[in-house]
Image (tube, rainbow, N blue to C red; front, side, top):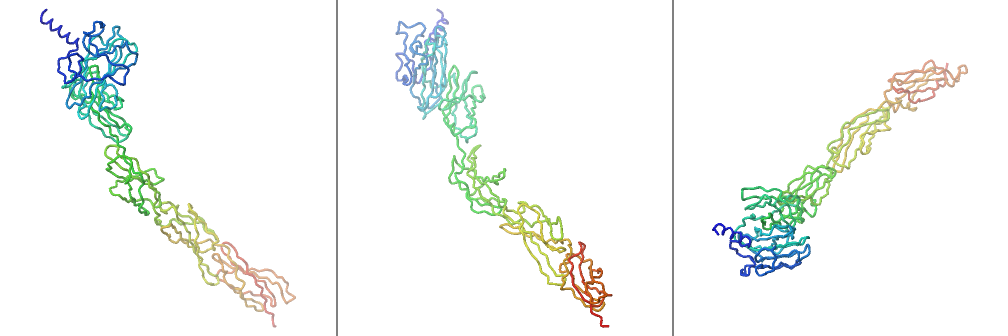
Length: 593
């Protein structure tokens, strides 16, 4: 046999027997002459059956389906479908880069799957989680080598657990051998750099950046594993160089319930990389338990105390703000606050406001929801000014219809207000009587800007003033004068009629009506004989009428009969017509001839 052929046969023999050249820091070769102190494993307590230690060279009746050597074996035909067997390695607490290496075979003569082989990495005696590596099916009558690059270091510890599950076909074998702890990096699986904790505020996206070094196959899967075992695929994988890459995992709009430990895992048929567990810390943005307190209220300001001693959520608080809005308004304003009290300026008078405190902690989305609102109202302010635009819409002889500008809140500056219409006019006797002044103020209904004054004297100057009042003050407008229209005049007072009778004449004098009700344009005097001491005179005689100018308040009746009684009437006239008639009877003197 030549040298080349001998080396080839030797290489095949080494591979078939699962013998590896590197020196292991610890591990299990399951050979009789192996160091027992380096091989510490236990059978699982929570499975259905145990792995079987096989040494084929000591067993002459071993089937030809099995490989030669000493190794752990599961014969699928001897167990029910779905049953499991677990093998636990000793707990490891390493302080430097290392590699867990093992060999396996899954083989069935007819090509059916004997079952599945899974590897788990449990940290600090925590939950088992999801398998970091798994294989199933029939992979030929040969050994396959796998590496686990576990980046968990002292003071943390971890334990590798292998689990074989029998398939429903229940044919073939699952074997494991040469489980070794190597004190140098894995060649087939990437090693992760330390994964740092991620802190975000609730409702924000959390991103884990998993940086790894080593070889990664094109079929490598990148997963983020939660402590409970839930898996999430990578959002992106970016190669920084031919042996260095970063996998990004984004958790959308995280909540407090998602706060947990997470680690990065790569999976391929050749092995798996497993990072340390890092914590996703989800902070709840803070908000006050109680509403702010009102210290003082004015017409355009409110002074409040923030009252943020008790909060819900997480600190530290880096910013405090006041959010306020008018109760009936869709808008709101936010003001930053750096003291325990704050004065809100430029508010509307007599307006209800909702005032809340906003608290912010570090990080994006760190502002919590508004705290309970303080509902408070500003005081009224004095009316802005007096009412304007007072005009007459209709003027009659005895009534006056008025209107003015429409009232609005920006004028009243209070929802509780009143409008008064005050007027005055003078009364004067037509015969020079005493002057008197009538004054009166009337309340105007809300939401109206018109009013009618009634029972006014005709043809008189009416002086009107509007007053706008609220609890904080009063504004009076300027006085506006209007004149009522004319009316028919009042009657001439009978007692103002004075006369001087003669035999054939009567001199009559009278005074202007007490209520002229306009401009007197003329007087009308009528007279008629109604009785006579002279039987030769026909009575009643014809009625005669005389008109007098407005400034003629006297008349001389001539060509009368002596000893005759006359019925005399006097009435005044304006543009509206004649007024009431004043009557008197006058008898001429009897002739003495």
